Length: 225
Ligand SMILES: Cc1cc2nc3c(=O)[nH]c(=O)nc-3n(C[C@H](O)[C@H](O)[C@H](O)COP(=O)(O)O)c2cc1C
Image (cartoon, rainbow, N blue to C red; front, side):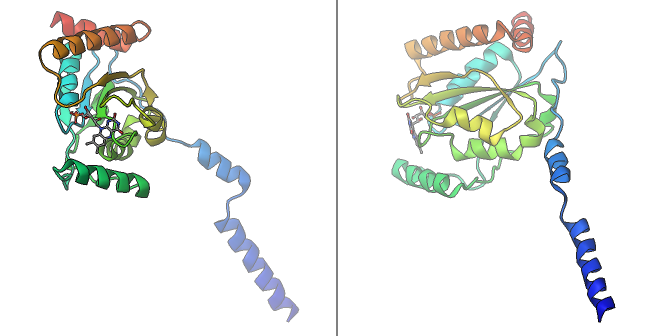
C-alpha cells in the first residue's frame, strides 16, 4: 500500500516537472520574442505603401506619398467586401470592433520582408483603426517586427481617436513614426485641396527625414531617379 502511494506521489511529481514550467522557465520563454527584422538595405531602401480607402481620399494621399518616395502601392481589400451603404458599414464596423473581429484580407503581400519602410494609410473609422488595417498589422506582425512603420491618416474632422495608439497594440515590435493627419470630408482631394495636401505630405516627409537616415535616403533616391 505504502509503495503504491509513493509511486503515485512520484508520478505526480514527474508530471508536474514535465508539464508545468517553473517561473524562471516561463520568464525565459517571454524573453524569447522574435528578433527584430533589421532594415534590409539602408543605402537603397525600398518602400511599401499600403492603404485602405473607401471614398478615395486616402488613396489620393497614398499616391502623393508614392510620388515622393517611390516603392510599391497596395490597396487593402477584404475577402468579403463591406456593404456600400454608409449606415450599414458603420453598423458592421462598430460590431466588428466590439467583437474584436479581424476581417480576413483578400490582398496578400508577397515577400513583405523585402521592404525597409512600410507606409500605412488609413481613414479614421469609429474613432479607431479600421478593422482591415488591424487585420493587416496582425497578419504580418512577425514580418513587421522591428520595421519602420509610417502611418498617415485621413478623417472627417474628428481626428485620429485611438488609432495611432492601436498601431503599437496590433504591431508590438514595430517602430511607429510620426503620422500626418488630414481632414478629408467627402472626396476633396482635387484642385486646390489636392495641392494643399501635396505640400503637406512633402513637408511631413521632409520633417520625418531630419532624424531618419532611411527616410532621407528614400527621398533622395527618388528625387534623383
Ligand atoms: C465606417 C466608417 C466610420 C467612420 N468613422 C469616422 C470617425 O469615427 N471619425 C471621423 O472623423 N471620420 C469617420 N469616418 C469618415 C472617414 O474617416 C472619412 O470620410 C475619410 O475621409 C474617408 O477616407 P477614404 O476616402 O479614404 O475612404 C468614417 C467613415 C466610415 C466609412
